[in-house]
Amino acid sequence: MKAVSLKSFWHPIATSAEVSTKPRQFVLLGEKLVAFRSGDEVAVFADLCIHRGAALSGGTVSNGNIVCPYHGWAYDKSGTCVHIPSLPAGMPIPAKARALPYEAREAYGLIWVCLSSPAQSFPEWPENAWNNPGYKVNFVKAYEWKTSAGRVVENAMDFSHFNIVHVGYTELADGPVVKPYEVNRTERGLRYAYDDGHLLREYTVDVTFIVHDRKSVVKVGTAVTWSDRPDSKTGDATILTFIASPVQDMETRIYVFVSRNHSLDKDDEGFTGGFDAIMDQDRVIVETQRPEQIPIEVKEELHLRVPDAAGIMYRRALREIDKAEAFALP
Image 1 (tube, rainbow, N blue to C red):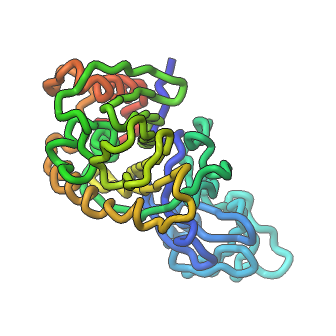
Image 2: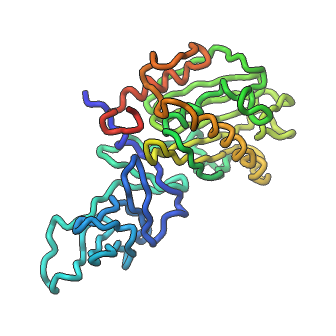
Image 3: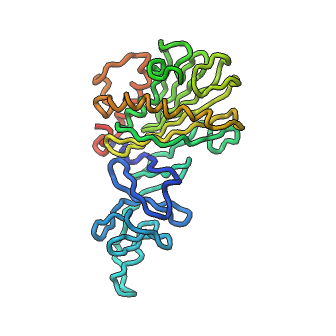
């Protein structure tokens, strides 16, 4: 059976605010794309005019159509060429005069693209937080790291470095020694949980590059993480979400969100303000990792059976993806 291509997964290329009626170039998996709004919809094409190869991102949008800056060819949101200024009125437009469209979807405040069909299932959010009135979701920001998306995800999955790298921010309450925990494969990726006596951290990993870390308070009065508050109650849950978009071989854009089912009337900064420091602590280390792409053959790096259990399972999941079409998985 043919392996699934990395290009058939949904990846974000931008925040919703970054896409407008002015065409703009974005890059995903090394491919240049152009995104623009056409009425109430978002269109994403290869950033290439089929006529002479000019970048459509240098053009304009007129009446919902993107217009090439070179010869004025206009394409509608489906990619069909609807006007060629150099043709006489009434002259038919060649059927092959089409832009190269990709599947695009706007969700969770992001613009998502799938580069190859058939598309894999669209990502979901734990607790259906975006539509759950008991939760509040905040976009923190997008971070740019000079590393592969796989390394970013493996870092977000790994709690055994917390007491070394993130002292004063998010270390495990019961110390650095990692207790045995169970990792389960799911239809979408992985699920596992870790209880440090204060927080129950429940991880949901969507293969390829999405990590949700749901932290729920199990014992009050033992807070050691930056996102806890003195008035935390048992059952308070905070979901940290990391979505790594593979821009280039060594360039990843990370979209970070915080969702919570508590303190809904409180200032969001109290729950998102520590991210710049935490992300930078990780970035300076992850950008030094070699090889830059995570080795998916388990034998290529040394692993500890308990602390690295989730990472080992993640690498096994990545082995099922077609590496021939995915530079991020050499």
